[in-house]
Amino acid sequence: MISRRRRILSGLTAFTNITVFDGARFIEHVTVVVRDGMIASMAPAAAGEPPDEALPVKGTGRTLLPGSIDCHVHLGLHNPRRVLRHGVTTARDLGWPLEQVRALAAVETGPRLLYAGPMLTAPGGYPVRAGWAAPGTAREVSSADDARAAVRDLVSAGASVVKVAQDPRGPTLDVAELRAIVEEARAAGLGVTTHVGSLEQLERALDAGIGELAHGLWSDERIPDATIERLVVAGVTVVPTLHIDPSPARVANTRRFVEAGATVVYGTDMGNPPAPGGIDADELRLMGEVGMPPDAALAAATARAAEHLGLADRGRISPGLLADLIMVKGDPREDLAILAKPLLVMRGGRAIR
Image (cartoon, rainbow, N blue to C red):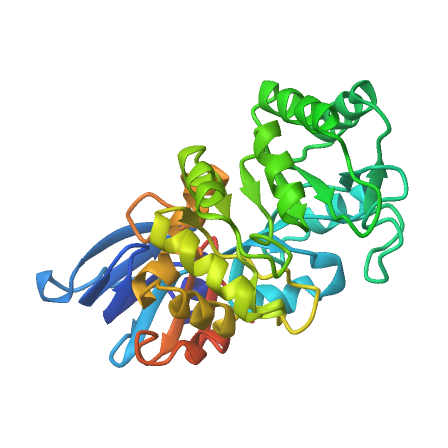
């Protein structure tokens, strides 16, 4: 008989008779077995008893979900361990000094971290003087060749995406520079995301072939129907980050993205208030207000986020995938707030204390 302590340390765990959100749908009365950091099996609870050596976790009245995947964070402004303990098992940092963010990515007690490194911007452009941004959060580029060189440097440093800043409160990159960034990133297999602060800049981003809006539109301008259609046809993904500025105009634009069929994934801009250092239930609630039912909003924070980021090994509860999991008391379809205080968080089958 394996001791309880050995079972906890080994991650050999069985969640019995639990409700599961598998990344797409809710399934009741399920037993999920975790072994060696992976999801070993998932079956109806009535199908039989879990392995004798597994540590049983009673699931009655509880829900098991994939760990949250936050597509927009600034992890250097939070404690990584706290972020993981509050349910974010994978995150993508969209703007921080390169050496600092690479160090954060090596922290095994925090979320698994993808990163952009510094944002590419015009000389003197956002976020060079932004109060929240540590020195090195921006890299200024002054030509298309300079932009290509910057992308190559980011690729060499392990970036998983390139972020550009198009904030008209300061100088901005021209279309030729943006196209150079997109072409160089695409050649390396990376996408480009943009902080875009006006309709004019949004059209410029679309002209350049940028594939993701890091905040939707960071402006209270109404997006024309033709631009919405153009965005959908181009397959642009929207990360709304509504909670940090849920203005009526931003909410309305995001609702129109959803209604038009745009791909919308979860991101919070964690590090900027009021986004918390963990799962943001208010962000998920706002996603509901723009037309995404609870299962769709949760999918945007799990399976769809993983798909968008190219992560085939997580975001769902299915045999053979990473056991990056959270367990909550109750049913998030009835109360999203329970997601902010998970009873248990696992990264790779290991409980985070």
